[in-house]
Length: 169
Image (tube, rainbow, N blue to C red):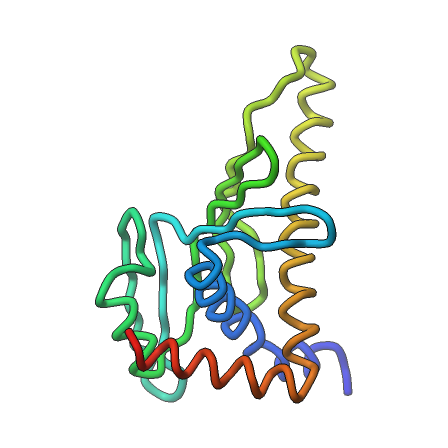
């Protein structure tokens, strides 16, 4: 199987990841433990949900807390998946804003924490470091998701919890 086919066959994982992240952020009040480090993840300002299949119906929700809206919940319950989400990620004293697209897990519109450096060269390196730190945090979250997703028993339990969460709200 070539690389393009493998990417196409696993494209659904991005939507599952963002839906799982939504659920986990509600259940754990946004707190996640990654190794020895605690981070917080919140859905912020924009959420896009799409229907799969022949008809591409899209719901775009712009709100301070988009996952708390009735429209977002109804869209998810109707079978739409998370196609794009604006996330606020907080680790230690730093906060990032980033939009994650589910089809390829690309990161756009990254807003990094305030820079401490004064020299231009140092600022460039600091910006790159902060972007890399955000990527590492999101990679670790995705790794946590994949550990559960690839474990049949854990994923069966997780999907049961997700279904109950969807029906309860």
